[in-house]
Structure formats: structure tokens, C-alpha cells
Length: 411
Image (cartoon, rainbow, N blue to C red; front, side):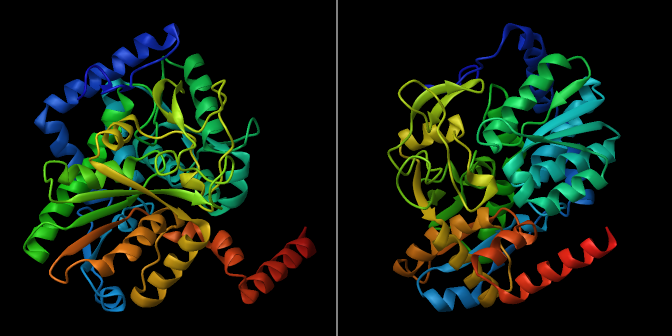
């Protein structure tokens, strides 16, 4: 139950006093937008004309035949402009930024999809834009960094800490403290201080609204289960929100199991037992932390799922049993992605492929008259370096070596 930013015992707004007026302004602008039907209509129209919504629900006959059991449907958020569900939240926050009269936006990004989406939004609305990205993620997500910079964004590699998403978030908050008057922080997932978890989930709920209508039209009844990967939790909140009031639909979130159990080997907060409740980055939830509350290192083959915390809304849904959480290992993720590519010609991002892993494990045990939905939250264009390395593709290695030699000759 939500009470000023709390979902049961999770959430809140643990922020420095200097930021309180900025958060009050943001909360008021968001509440006004929620109460204004014209705002949601403007948002839907923008997403329709600019970001290809409604995204389709694709029936996967080949995968269904391969596994047997329930019919497999995939919600195609990869077909959003910029290649992921991130555009939903970013364009909504862009409209709020205009309402508040701000002229600059900042953002954190891990896999880079949120950064690309924010840079795209800034280009469209004419905002100045700065993106904070862990140095390690800059290295493994170079294609997304390239496009952010082409769109005019300043990409700042973060060298502190583990040099991944949690460190980028910290730097973005430091920026915001010193530039509150003209800057809005476009937080990318359903985490952080109130009202961000509620606000991001509201914009992403467009996924679930569409998916519910689409599955009823295509299948004639609600799905047996809905699967989504979970990093911070925005794409999962988007899909799951369409079915919260349908107890017959089981909701399954899949976290980054990485290399397996053990601190530093994964980024699973809810499926494994390594997380504990704490307060960090402005909110209360489950974190991978030590006894002193120091954040621990995480690992995932996917840059977008190695976050140390999880949405306070999902933490509450975990504790009350509404969402079941599982974990998928790096090896399983690459195998699920390759199978989907070969069987259906779809290319799910490594993040999204976590949801595919658990769905593939379970779908064969369900009745053929049932259906499941998997949220393909993004596509794997950005992951080409990581995937090629994981599958040890010799032709890709030859291409990279030849390209490097070509650059050396012209340097």
C-alpha cells in the first residue's frame, strides 16, 4: 500500500535537505499530470507518433512447438524507438520537464539504452543533456555511447567504486544537487526516492495496458504467467501492472544470476539470499550489502541488470507473494538468446533474455490451452560485442582485428 512514497515498509525519500524543494516541485508536477487526462492523452499521442506504440504482441509458433506446453507470446518493447522500453519513461519525464520549465536533463545509464533514450528525448525537446555511465559499462556498451554523443549528449565515464550503474547514479545525484534550478534528473528505473518509483512505473504501465488488451484479443483469455527480467524493475513493473488485479496470472521476475551464488558473482536481490534491507540512494529496499551497509560488487553478463538494489514496489510484491522471483545465469542467458534468434528471428537483449530463460524452463509443464507472455524489453544490437565474445565467434574476432589494424594505419 502506498503512503507518501512507501510500499509497505519499502520506499520513502531519504534525501539531503537541499533537495527537498526540488522533490516537492517534482511530486506536485507529477500529481498534477496524473490528475489531468489531457496529459496522458498527450503522452500516448507522443508515443504513438514518435516511438511506434502500440508495440505488438508476437505469437511464437516455433518456440511453442519446440517446448510444447503453453503458447508463447512476446511483448515487443524492442520495437520502441531507441530499441527498448526505456523510451516510455523518458518521453513521459520529458513532458514533465517541459511543464516544470527546466532546460537541462541528466541521467544515469548502465546498458546504455536509458542513456540513448534520454539523449533522444533531449534532442527532440531541445534540452541540454549529460549522461553518467560507469567506466566499465562505457567500455562494453560503446555502440550506445556513440549514439548518445551523436545526439549531442555529454557522456561522463564514472571511475569511482565498481564503475557500473550504482556509481553512475551517485554521480547523477551529485550533479543534481548543484544544478537544481534548471535541471531535471531523468531517473531510468523504478527505484530511488519518491516519487520516482511511482512515476516511472506509471509511465511504463503503458506496456501492461497494451499487453492485457492484446492477449485477450489474440488468445481469448488472460495468460497463465507473465515473465520479465528485473534489474531496477521498470520493464517488469510495466508488464506486471496490466495484471496486478488478475490473481489467476502468475507474475515472474527474473534477476541476474551471473556466475552463481556468492557475493560479487551475481546481482540477484530477491531470488538468492545474499541481500538485506537497507537505505541507500534515497530509498529503502533490498540491497546487496555487507553488515555495515556498504554496497557489494555485483556481476552480470548484461550491463543493465547489475544494479545493487531493486524497486521498492517489487520488494513489497516479493514479500507479499504477488511476484515470484527467479535467477538466470550468464550461460543460460546467452543460450536462451541464441535459441530465440534461431527459432524466431527475434534478437532479445541480454537483459530481456533472463526472462526468456525462466519461461523456457517452465512453459513445457503448462497446458497447451494456456498462454504465457515474455517481455522483450529491448533488442541486442547494443550487446553485439558481449555476445560475440561469449559465443567465441571466429569471424567476429577476425573482423575486429582487421578493423583495429585499419584504424592504426590511418591514425
